Length: 275
Image (cartoon, rainbow, N blue to C red):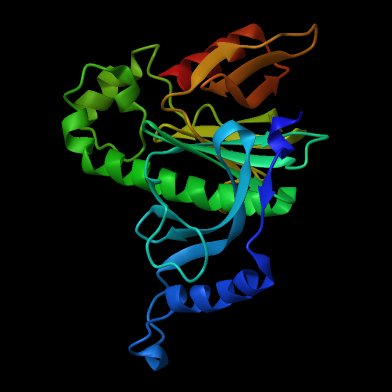
């Protein structure tokens, strides 16, 4: 029996319709609706949550601006069944062809894990981007806040963040170290395997996050971003013309980077991603 599709639960049309009322309650202040206060949540909707033994249950998911992922049994409930802190979390997309729930997001926050199912790739991509934005923004704030103390750290990887301030003498010393690779220098166009498809993207590492852009100028939000903390970076299966690097999290493949320059460039990317 296919465990991924062994059980699916719905709460009926009445519950589906009431999600709009719940969303309205979340989005705007009930006490002063005319003032249009800032929305409390970034996104909400009925999604499928993977439960024990591969069972799926349809529940209301909300991502609040406070970086909390909350899950409710239905729209009428005020107390969430689940609260997950998204700051610093990891998210992995899985595409399972032939399964009833073909698109999944696995969100790992510390010792807590939740698997969310989606009906289509576009919906999964929308939620993945928002979760990664929340997680990445926390990592950026953390790096910026600790920039002064990081100057005293012995680890060379703390020196490659563009937000860390150095004196001229410190920069001169760092520039002579071969292992202190700048993420700006390593902005390359690579073939990237993400979400079961190959794309040609401009890649760079910033604040411990692998960012991938469609354009070289990198002015817009990245197409994809991967938190490298906790990821396993290893050499992939090279071919006669290409060199590959695999990024995995808890045994699940997150991305494959492929470049056709040379083995030395692959080693530089391996070092940058592992630092």
